[in-house]
Structure formats: C-alpha cells, structure tokens
Length: 227
Image (cartoon, rainbow, N blue to C red):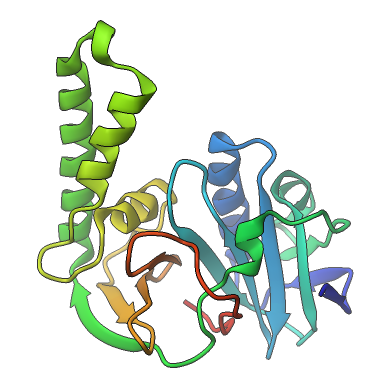
C-alpha cells in the first residue's frame, strides 16, 4: 500500500540533500530506469534501492526538519531531478509501479551489532577483491570472457566472507561502489533477529543482504532510523 502525506521533504542536517543526490546518481549509472522506495516516519526519511548487478539492498537515511508520513516507490531519476541542495529539500515525484524487491525489506527491529571493522580495512578488502576480479577476467581471454564465465567468477569472489564475520564481500563491494566507505568511522556489522539478514552500516549508508546471499525473503519494513 502506498501512503503519502507529503509532497516534499526538508532535511534537518546540512549536506543531506547533496548526499542523497550522490547516492541516486550512483544508482543511475548502473540502471537508468532504477526505482527507489521512499519512506518517512518518526522524523527520519529513508531511500531504499537495489543497485543493478548487486544482490543487495542499500539504504540511505536522513533526519527531517519536520516529521511527515510517507511510503512510496518512485523513479530514482525523477527523484534526483527534484533534489534542491541549497534548500536541503527534495520534492516527491509521482509513484511508479514498484519492482518486486521494493516489497521485500528487512525486519523493523531486532538488530544486533556483532562487530566493527576499521573503514580503512574494509576499503582495502574491497579494492583487493575488485582487483582480483579484473585480473582473473583478463586471464580468461576474449574467447572465454562471456557473461556466464564472468558471472561465475563474480559469484565466487563476492560470496566470500569478510574475514571471519560471515558478511559476504558482495556487501562490501556494494558499499564501496555506492560511496559508503568514506570517512574514518568504523563500519558496523549487524544481524537481524533470527539471523536471516546481515547489515553493513557506515556513517553514509547501509547495505543489507540475506544471510544466504539473496535479497529474497519475507516482506517487512525496516525502521527508518539514521545510519
């Protein structure tokens, strides 16, 4: 069900609109027709996305100047066009028919932090994995570098865990590509009650994966609290 009670959102903190624009811009590099689910409750807005080529969900949140109620799926491109960085605001475009993932969000409550990793270490792991993929893809040769071979190689690399944490490297890869691995604050690792979802959270956004590596699962809503 689509709930709308606001035509626009105004962020409480400087730089939130610019951060949202950067997030949307990165999504659109991979999929020009990308859609996002936009929610607002309890004075916080959240934008959920499933970046193309990544079997993960991503979310960026921000505090609002005034609380509003909103739950709608919209075009990422149209939302980006409506971001006003000077006014720290964004106008809400018309709803679109949402993709299947938009109804498959992680649980609202029950998250438990089970680890924290220095962001420098996570960036290093991400860069090493990307480098390995490129090197091994080149060694396949032009005749063997088809979609099936590349997909198999990607699955091998991105399914590996981050150290002993159990967090798949696909989450690290996505966080790196989305610009979430910036700054100096450690990256938090969280697990949902029941162990069905894992979450990599930084000061700039979160990446969520099913514990089995897929974003398919029961429909629920994720609490929109600041990342």
